[in-house]
Image 1 (tube, protein in one colour):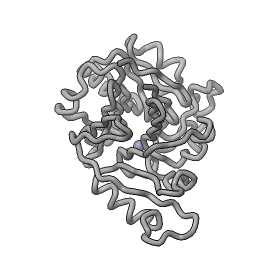
Image 2 (cartoon, helix red, strand yellow):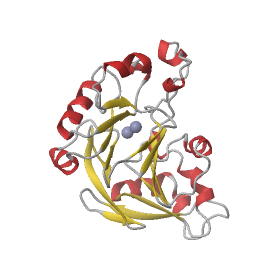
Image 3 (cartoon, protein in one colour):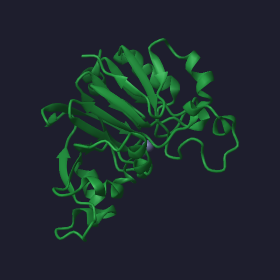
Image 4 (cartoon, protein in one colour):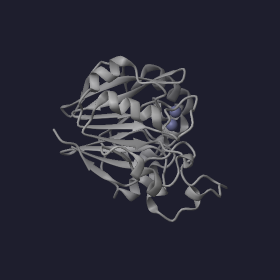
Length: 254
Ligand SMILES: [Zn+2]
Ligand SMILES: [Zn+2]
């Protein structure tokens, strides 16, 4: 199983429009971060996790891979704003998306034409599948377990797929999720910046989650320009923790 980080930036992306800070002016490609999204590949199955506003660019950068389905962590714009661009993947049979019931309802309001009974010619056609925390489901024989995650007041989900746990936009990782993913090979976890934030883990809090889960490797995602330069932050992290970078592909060990 392989995971490609399509984007590792927070909602503004890095650089941020109009910002003159050292990170936003950096020429290091490891400091360029599109909005958070990832592609999981197992055999012929390619599963997209979130489809933010950079989705189209991310698919082109990844070589336009075929996609089996989309898993949504939640419907904030930086995670779902690219759904309209799924249209090349929607024909002839529609495209399968998996999200919590409230998130499917939210999408029916935001992009109603993707769920139309008689779609406008060429419009995206989405086949919604309702998922719930701790209720595993399968895509092409691959078992996926949605994990409860607190994003300030929102109940969103992360995913455990084989020996990978993928969590973004957590402010709090509940004990039942920690228990469900203890000792996984690879943990992906959001870490926004050094300072406290109301709805996202900061670096110290993300490192605490990593300590509790004890993965072989942990990768940080959903990173803000306030985290600082990759070249300065990476050396300060524990041996088994790295900031993820856009376009990087990692191997998940069984
Ligand atoms: Zn969010
Ligand atoms: Zn986000």
